Image (cartoon, rainbow, N blue to C red):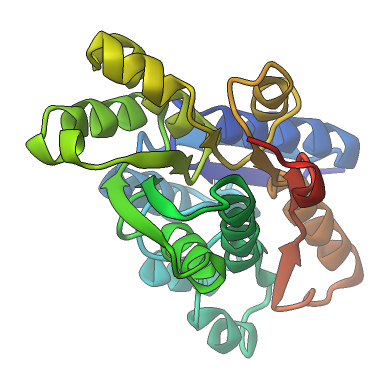
Length: 298
C-alpha cells in the first residue's frame, strides 16, 4: 500500500514553537503511517513559495499528496490554486485564507485551514496586562512581522481587552529570540526610552520575550538594568520545556499555552482522505493563560 506523502512547510527553524510544530508533525505522521517531509522557509516568503511551487510542479512519482503550510507572509493563493488543480490536498495553518471556500467547490482533495484563535490569545494577553499592571502605565510590546495575520489578530485582541490606562509602545520582531533582542536593544539606545517609565514587557511569543530580557541584561545601564529586570515579562506559546518552564523559574511572569497545529491538521487530513470528504472549512484550537489569570501576581 502506497503511503500518503505530506509536505509540511513551516516558517523558521530558529523558533522553538516551529520546532515543536515539526516534531508534532513527525510524531503524528508516524502514527498515521504518513510519509512526512518537513521544510523551513527561513522567514522568507519568496523562498517558501519557491519550495512549494517546486513540490507542486515535480514529477508525479515525487509529488506530495498533501501540503500543510504555515505561510510566512500571505496565505499563498496562487500556490494553493496550483496545488488544487493537480489534486494535492492543501491545509493552511494560522492564516486567513478567503480562497479556501472557492477551492473546496471544485477540488478533488481536501482543502481546509487550522489556526490558533489568535484574537482570543490577544484577549488573554490583554487580561494578563490588566492584572500585572493594576495602576496603569506603559507597556513595551514586541509584535511579530507586520504582514502576519497572527500579529494583527493578537494585537487586535489585546487592544480590545486592555484597560484604557495602559499605553502600548510597539516594537517589531520576527518570532525569533534574536529579533526580540534587536528590537529592545535598539529601543534602549533611544532618548525616549530614558523618558518612558515602562511597567511591563509583553511579547507576542516567548522567544522574543527572552530576547528582550537578554537585551536589557546586555545593553542597559546598571540602574536601568536593575529596574527593568524586576518588571514582569510575558510571552505566548507556552511549550512545557520553554515558556511554562520560564514561568516556573520566574523568568517570565506569564505565557499563553498554545497547542501545536500540525498534529490537528494531519489527523483531520487523514480522516478526510479516508472518508473522501471535506473537513470543516476552518478549525480553531483553544489557548489558556499560564498561570491562570486569577493566580497572576507581580
